[in-house]
Length: 292
Image 1: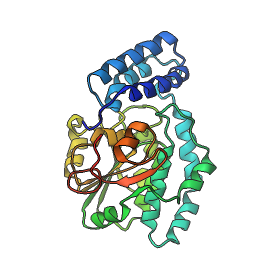
Image 2: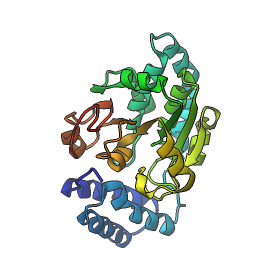
Image 3: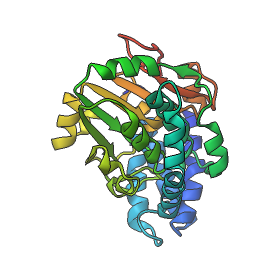
Image 4: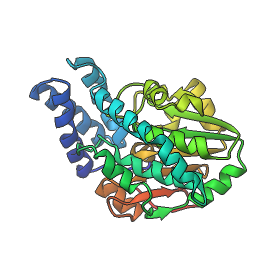
């Protein structure tokens, strides 16, 4: 496990669960129970996605508004990005490297994130960022590596961001086997299989669920098809900070990360200021050798 959580992670959970509990129609007593579980798990050294997974399971079970408390937001952002899909595709086709442009857009769409308890972005402001420079950019290395691969696995993150992942998979000249892995259960606004299908990802990749109740991919927890695909993939694109936290420190040269830095812990670890876009490896055998 690569991340060394501290008080900053706990404060982030405290802020986020205020919103989550309100959305679920639950009480301050429920909030205190969920936060106590998170605090205990963080004290054991669990990375944030694993530290919060038990409380999310409890929240889903107790919620009086349904187990998918971000259902409306997920549907809204997926639909909004789909409205712009054809225009973005045509714009990217006019660039020197359409798949590279789509990868950058997918990185910036990581801003569609409810995990930090911060407001979700306005669609137009988000669209205006899609061509912005990345603070750490290894897209060219990824594309060169992909050209030699037979199997690509994308580890999905947020609903809405899924549409840009589809656009990349639509535009890439890669013709090998493509897999897209989602969350098993609703957690924050992360994409499940249903959300990935809404984005049309089933048209460009084989969809699989992680099979684990964690908003991250943690390889040792995977089983069955999910584990088989993860272990056999030639190259892996991991979207979002959750997947960074689940995979960081594994020294796996197959894994490239795509995310926006949203917290001081990840900022210190990567050397990238909050708000910076990142597309890079973090391994001992290539890319950037940071230590979380």
